[in-house]
Length: 93
Image (cartoon, rainbow, N blue to C red; front, side, top):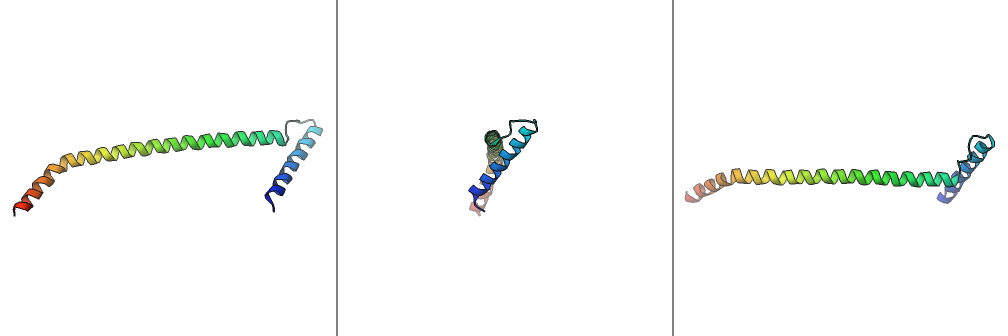
């Protein structure tokens, strides 16, 4: 089914629902314009949530990279002299 036809069918259904509810005196606030506004607001809300999640992931990734570099530096400072002694010992034989 064509996307435009499906969209039009959905909007017609929303309009019919809003009209029926209005006839019953329930509400007159359900129509395609309010539905579109709601969907756009929710879309922006979820985009904001996604951006927030991405920022948290990037922050944790940065912290992990910093920790990994720190561990490597400390390992080099501890193992570096041992490696140098070993290399001198191998070179002298």
